[in-house]
Structure formats: structure tokens, C-alpha cells
Length: 235
Image (cartoon, rainbow, N blue to C red):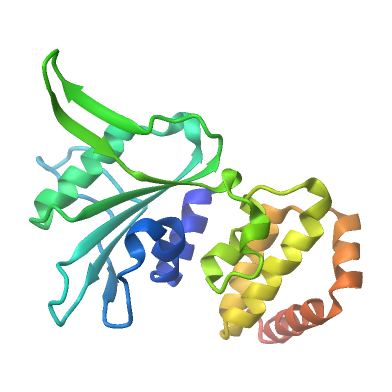
């Protein structure tokens, strides 16, 4: 399962909602006047033929009216926390800062599994620290799913199955995710696309699917009608 690609699609399809959920502490200023632009993932090489660094999804946020300086959100998804490298992330951010000639870079890491990872990087000697680096961490399993059941942020609703909840609530969590998709996303094609996202991470078994269909017939009917229509169209 390529979780990186799943989250890349999610962030690119919802470039405003993603920072608002994953980086709420910094994204409050992204209003309707701001322009959010995905930028190239492959960073420039110092020498041709060298291995390049590839980001998950860097987003450039600009305010054309000049009311704020532009910012770059560096959003990385890490499936397994043990594989996370804070040094690699620091390299990414420094590369972007140099490339775009800015110091307004906001690193964000979305953790899908695990909770043990390095949170800060200090480089220095006995007398002083000469480089300090940290990032915004969104540890999905540590979030209480129930706190987001009624969220109007679609990225949050789609990630309900990745948050913390009792196994007894799995069907309820799935239902709130699907209901958010139906009510917050008007595009039928994207509804089907992100129903797959919810299915992948909810992992309902057959009994749970039957319970969902029995308890939530309205959402089930809506998604089934879209699926049937696209099947007839050969999609």
C-alpha cells in the first residue's frame, strides 16, 4: 500500500483544508485572499546525476495583495514513525529556503503509525547551540476521532479512521467519514475517489459492512448510486 501517494492526492486535491487540519497552528491566516500553489517536489541537484531529494507535497501560500509575506508549507507523510529522519526533513526545508530565497518555511509531518520519533534537532558545541530545528507534528493515532466527527474540514473527516477510537466504534467512525464526504464534497468523481481512501483505512470486515448498511442506509444509497452510474459509464 503506497500511503505516500494516498496522502499526496489528498493534499493536492484539498490544498486549503490539508494545512488547516495538519498544521492548524500556522494555517489560520490562509483566507480567501490567499493563493495556494503546489510547487515542484524534486529539489534542484548540486551536480547533475546526483540523487535528488523529493518532498511529499510542498505548498506555496501567497497573498497577492501583499498583506502577508509568502509561506511554504512542507507537508510530509510518514507511515512508520521509526523511519522518520529529522535530518532529512531539515535538508528539505533548507533546500526550499535557499531555492525560494525565504525563511518562511513551515515543516509539517503527518504520522500514520507509531508515536516514537525525534521531535527536535540541535547542532552545537559545549557552549552554544548553532542550529535548532523542529516541526509541526500531526500524530493521527493520538487524536480522538470523536472530536472530529462533525468537523467541516473534509481532510479531517476523511482521516477519522486513522485517528484513535474504540474498536466498538469502527462503524460509527466510518459513517461519520462517509457522511462528511457526501456533504462536504459535491463532485461525484471525487466522492468515489475518496470513498476508496476511507475504505482503505477503515478496513471494515463483512459484518461491519452489513451493520453500516443497516444503520446508515441513506449514505449507502448515495454512494452506491454514484458507483453504479460510473460503472455504466465504464469508469
